Image 1 (cartoon, rainbow, N blue to C red):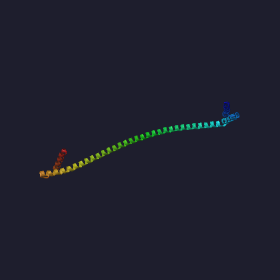
Image 2: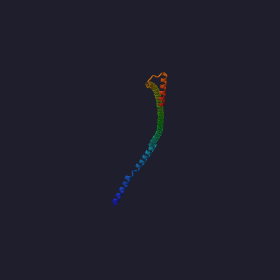
Image 3: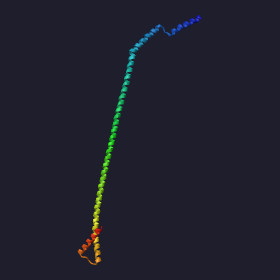
Image 4: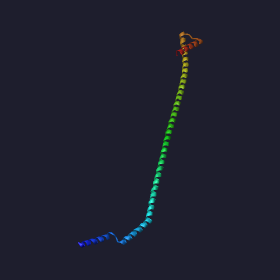
Length: 179
């Protein structure tokens, strides 16, 4: 059993030696770590800090550019909407003017048509009156001739000129009264 304990003690001593390195190695390792740490603090960390600062500034710049672009887009949209509203207003104004012009043209056309119709009607009435007067004159002449012919047959004699005019005037008067 002693051998076993001795063997276990030897094994435990060599196990600690296996876990912990030699003292010289610990010292050299600590010095190397300190040197690497100093070199990293002197050269690597500032470079990394500068790199991170540059990256932060780049991101900040991109965010500012994006915000400016968003604001510019919003302004352009407002301008577009204002122009669209102006265009709609202009279109409505043009439509209103076109309606007014069309209404004025319609009134003018109706007025001209009414004037022309009145003129045609007046000419027609004048023509009808002139034709009536002409026909009445012809009728008077024919009636006078028929009346004279009839009167001469009835009387079976020829009337003298004065009696003839009196007879025609009397007959025309009687016709005029009956019309």
